[in-house]
Image 1 (cartoon, rainbow, N blue to C red):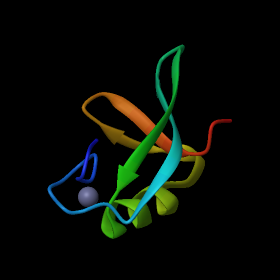
Image 2 (cartoon, protein in one colour; image 1 turned 90 degrees about the vertical axis):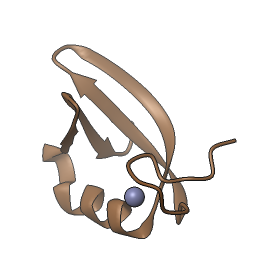
Image 3 (cartoon, rainbow, N blue to C red; image 1 turned 180 degrees about the vertical axis):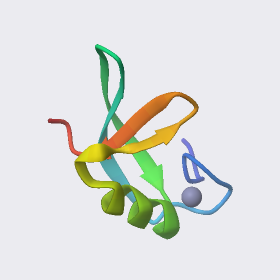
Image 4 (cartoon, rainbow, N blue to C red; image 1 turned 30 degrees about the vertical axis):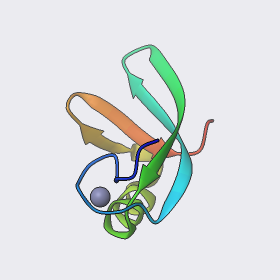
Length: 61
Ligand SMILES: [Zn+2]
């Protein structure tokens, strides 16, 4: 089981349902994020946050 944030080495604050997308591709995942990255993802809203060519946002819809 993963003990670190998806995007850094910090311990995760919580597990969150995210939508990951690229073009027409959609993936619904549950990922662990640290406080900083959780905040950034929430702030990105529906626009999402890009990471290595994929966009992420909170929620599965
Ligand atoms: Zn992080």
